[in-house]
Length: 243
Image 1 (cartoon, rainbow, N blue to C red):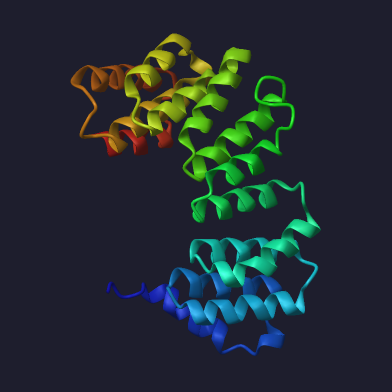
Image 2: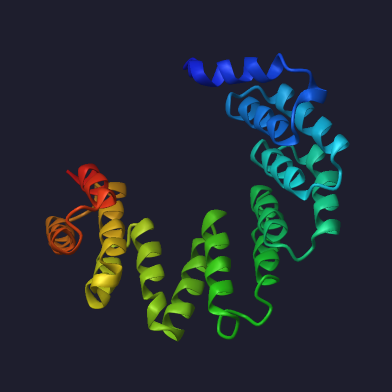
């Protein structure tokens, strides 16, 4: 097992040595999160539950703990906490996201889809574009890629501005041919850095399947961006990942 980074363990020790009553709520949350990412689950669970007992009305802490329980597949423990979140904020984006993530984690795709559909009751064809994008991101996050693609395509068909979101999704999925064709069709100075990020990200993420011609296309976008934004730190960093 790889040892924990020294700075992380040191932070845990510092917070552990402060009496609980002297810690701010955010500091107690930070300790719980440090335990979590350090794979000290019993300590994390104890810290988070104590935090929720002391601050029962703070939904932020409940959301964090519910997601930890889902990621750990602690289904029996999760139930009461999830129901509490659903009672407090039934229409909240985080509630919907975690309800869908919970269902997907249990292998129940249909309830996961239903949860996200509740976020856009008017459907992808009529709901506000930003809400459709949010729903698409939720589908993608929990691995419902077919539904995510349908949502991204629906919003891109409704408004030309959102074609870049579809291109970014397709690039993440390895559909580089279509993603790059969309980017080439919409390229302009205002979104040039975003297009470079999509191109470079796709080429790096799918290095085993990207073609020589697709690499050349990305390099052409980079050359254009260098002329427009010669001092862009983001571009230099992204380019380093490609080469």
